[in-house]
Length: 42
Image 1 (cartoon, rainbow, N blue to C red):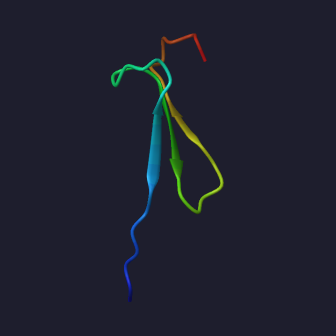
Image 2 (tube, one colour):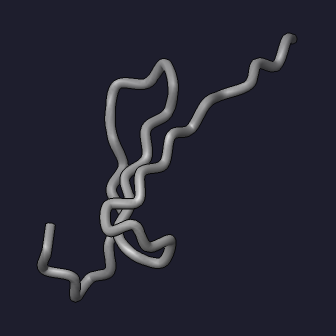
């Protein structure tokens, strides 16, 4: 079985690595969003 690499693109919404971010995985239809529970800016 061949193992292929994956590309993950991370975008820092606020420019802060500890803040909100979005992630996209190559060859996948969807988007992941990370934010703290008390963050109302989304």
